[in-house]
Image 1 (tube, rainbow, N blue to C red):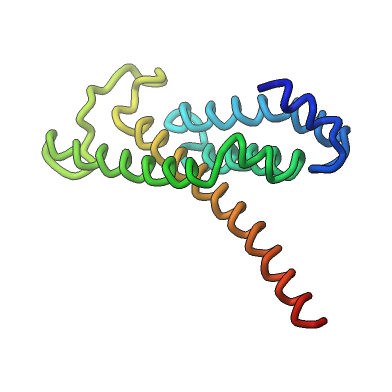
Image 2 (image 1 turned 180 degrees about the vertical axis):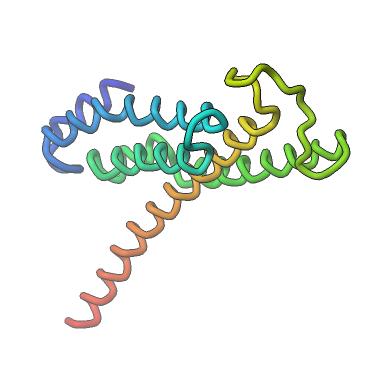
Length: 162
């Protein structure tokens, strides 16, 4: 897996320059760790599923813009983005429906822990994970759709002008 990216860093035909690719490769780990942190600790600090999902999607967008569409789609294909998008929505719905076991929709069915502990918020971290997955997949899918659609439209307009 790393050999593919090592080859792509020096491949000037796809993506940007080797400097941008090297910096993007360094930042990818930091972005993904920070996005996961924002999602998991969203009930204790500012952030949550939406903010963390946007950060994770920006990591994939940076990868795609730096290395080219082929590498970006190799790491997260449009089919997998659709599957993750639907899974995140379904997981969020299931968590809400499991609240019926405690009495009403989205009611906390997990025990409350100690204040300021990671497991102190009941179902909120589970909701953050579900929303983070959904937002990550949705934003990346929109980016891919717009980047592909934009090229198709511009090619169509250029063909009409000729």
